[in-house]
Amino acid sequence: MNTAILHTEIQDFIQKNLETDTTRLLLGKSPFAGISTRELAEQIESKKRCQKKLPLWYSTPGIYFPPKISIEQASSQATAMYKANLIQGESLIDLSGGLGIDSYYFSRKARQVVHCEINAELSGIAQHNAGVLEVKNMQFIQGDGLQELLSSAQNFDTIYVDPSRRVNTQKVFLLEDCEPNVPGNLDLLLSKASRIIIKTSPLLDIHSGLQELKQVSAVHILSVKNDCKEVIWVIDRDFQGQEPEIICTAINPDETRQYSFKSSEEKEFTVDHYSEPLDFIYEPDVSLLKAGCFKLLTRDFKIQKLHQHTHIYTSTKLESNFIGRQFKLLHCYNYRTFIKENKLKQANIISRNFPLSPLEIKKKHRINDGGQDYLLFTTGPQNDLLVLHCQRLDLA
View (cartoon, one colour):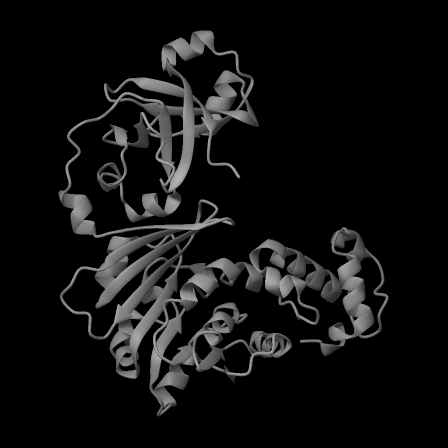
């Protein structure tokens, strides 16, 4: 961490050059003694990446930005704020604190937060930024969070951990292969706190995670603007022999919507009717799709499914509370008819339970991406290939 970067004239330079081509900057000579063009370019690039993901950090003067990879691995401001509402009690330890985004929002809910980070530079950056943000109730420990927990006599109300999914530069996909190994140390964690919160990648299979873990009281699937970002596992010491709640949360700039269910409900529920496309069409948010919630949506919203394997829904009246994209159906084509009659040269293409991908569809039918029209290529209740020409309704 080069503290010279925090000097006023250098901070002004970074702010004024946020739109500068950093490649050209790297080819030139640094205008400041003791600071390389690489360091300047890194600050500029990292700050730009925070504009939407971490707006508080982006807009606060004096923030020191880490390498881009640390920004990419950090929680977004939106998901960190959500997770802060899941903590329990007054004390929390973050075993893999990283840039400190989650810890910052935990500190606004808990009386005491301990931030552990094995990377010395990142630990220093997190501590500096917490000072800039005027956080008074965070302790910073540079080292292995799990070892710190082992050596500490203190117990906590909540333990938070974001296991690293890269081990020796290789990506891993099972929780037991991540660092730290949470399933292998779960008994230790539960002896130190009554609640454990684990952040994992959306790539982790929920069924697999439930097999690796125990006493999971809730699984939170978080999406931001219909992009699945995180799966959060809440483990409670007293939660035994019960089925966890699966909570799908769709975070958007104007509102957050939630839907919760239990896997047994989805498994046991039967859809007794599949519908032809009606006046309105619905595509579920990715958090619902990740959760495997397909049949229950017809029970809890006044909508019908098109086909057993088509996760597209329809209704005669608009269900504006539906969690996902909503469309007005303009015209329904049989795919063969569409091939003969289509005159659209630009549209947004969606393919669900259809033999061609969006890219293949655009290439085959010479359709450019974008515009106001949406074409949903799918399979209907009679196993017929359909094209639904729609208008998007849920745009801000």
